[in-house]
Length: 512
Image (tube, rainbow, N blue to C red; front, top):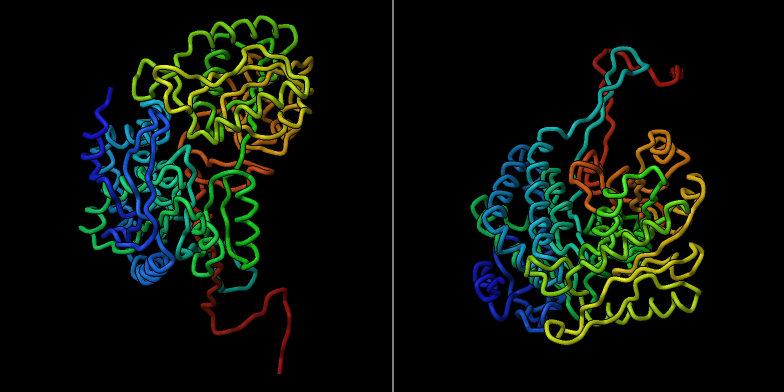
C-alpha cells in the first residue's frame, strides 16, 4: 500500500495549496478554501485555495502578454521545452499516478497509465513541432503562387473532467504549446490537487526556460463560476471542454454567442457488438475491462453489449463468472480491479439508475448494490451490475457514469449496427469478430457512426497517436494525435504575385 504522506511530500503538496498559477509562480488568491477528500477512504487529502475573480483577471492578463512572446519562439524551440516537461513527468510518474488514484479513485495501474499518456503526448508533440505543415497550391493566374500556413490562435482555455484529471489537460496543452498558444487550465472541481501537483512538477522547467504565463492554472471547487468565465471571455480564442453533454451544450452556446471556437469532448454511450464469429476469450476480456475499468467512469466505458442471439446465453454465463472474480477495494492495492466512484453524488446517480432500469423492465443478470463495511467506509464503493434490456429504454439512451452494463440481443449484423447507432452519443464502438466481411461492414460508411470504431479490441483505451473524439452529442471535437493540432491553429491562405502584371481571378477584366 502506498504511503499517502510521502506521495504528497514528493509532489510538494502542503496542507493548504494555492490553486492559481502563472506557470512559474503560484499566485496568492483571496478565493475560498476548499478541503479535498478522497473517495478511497473518505479522508481529507489537503486543501486548495480557489481562484478569485481578481486572480483570474491577473492570470488572463499574464497569458495575453506571454502569448505575444511565445508565438515568436520557433516551433522546434517550443517543442524542446515540451520535451523537458515530458522528462520531468517521467521522474514523478509513480507519485503523480498514485495521487491520481487516491484523489479520483481509479486503480493504481490506471493512474500510472494516465501519467504515461502525459509523457507520450509530450513525445508526440516534440515531433509535431517540426511538422506543422501547410500546402502549396497551383494558382490559375500566371506567375502566382498559392500556399496555406497555420498560425497560433492565442489563449486556449482547457476545462478538464475528474475521470482523467491530468491526461486530458496534457492532450490539449502540449499540442497547443507547440502550436504557439498559451493555456489556462481549469481542472474539475472534484480533482484539483492532481492539477496543482502537475504544476508543481513543471514549474522549474517553465522557470528555467523563462516561459512565464505559458501554462496557467485556475481552480474553482465550490463556486463553479470559472467555467462560465472562460466560456464567455473574448480574450480566450479556443475553449476545449471535456465533460457531460449538458455541460458541453452550455459551453458551446456561450462560446458560440461570441463566435469563439470550441472543442468539445462529451458523453459516450459505447457499445460492443459480439458476433457469433467472435473469439470469446478476447471478447470477454475486452467487455469486462471496458465495463468496470475506472469503475465505469470513462467516457469510453462499454455501456452496451449487443450479442448475437445464438451465443447470448453462453456469453452471459461467461460474464457472470468473470464478474464474480472482480475484486473491489482500495485502488492503491494492486490486487484490486476496481475502486470507488468519485463521490457520494455519483453513488446516488448509480442507485437511481438501478431503480430506473427495473422500472422500465430491465432484468437483472448481476445485481448492483452499494457496498459497506470494512474497506468501504467512504460510502463511494459499488458493485458492477449487468442488466438485460431493450435499447429504447430511456435509461439506456442516456449515459450513466457508473459500472452498469446492458445486454441486448441481435440476429443480423446490420440490425446490431442500427442498435449501436441508435443513441444520441457517438464516441466509441467495437465489434468482436473473426469474419473479415463483418469487420469491413462495421467500418464502412453504413457501419459505426462513432468517432472511434474498433475491431477485436474494446471501446476503452484509445492511443494518443490517433485523433480522439466523437460525433453527435459527443461534441464532434478531436484531441491528441493525427492532425488534431489544426484545431489549435488558424489557417491562412496566401497568394504571391511575382510578375509585373496583375491578372484577376476567373479571367475578370477591369480596365480603366
